[in-house]
Length: 250
Image (cartoon, rainbow, N blue to C red; front, side, top):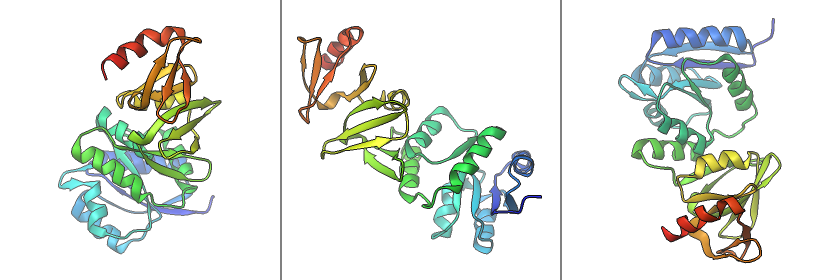
């Protein structure tokens, strides 16, 4: 039998959801030892003040508040958080921008295994990422920041400061207003989907631009955009009409 490597607690206001998650952990994640469970902000806060787990599976919506309330009540903490949610598309988008782990209920075993593996390799608790998530959910508006995974860190950047993104195989290179670039471990397709509501446009198979940083559209030489950092981004033939339409609406 595999020796336990991590301890955990489950906080969820639905008994069936708690039992289902506990069963999945027992079956698929034997390295995790469950120390307890709670069903509310009050009971969850009391539990975490007496038990010091490595991981907390935390439901966002509880009957007497939210999972964020628990984190605020207990103050300083050393455990990692994997959120669980049955929430709407807006919440899922907020999680993607924060790059924090979450599980949709009912929990899929493969996603559970992957979330546990990922959190094992993360040293930081992700306070800044949590702030991005909370701001987005509390204010019910599009995130102003995005958490970008590189090979060795997670960097939070303001979306307005992103000039353009370029595909590099399964990675994406970000270019910023302050200069420099960042190689991020996600595909351009994923960022195209995430940023399309933030004035970003896929101008080419390999390029995504922030339209707010476009200086001019040059129609000659195949067509390209001159950006605020003086870079030139190509525009594919099939994207020309959309680029012109978007520029005219700015």
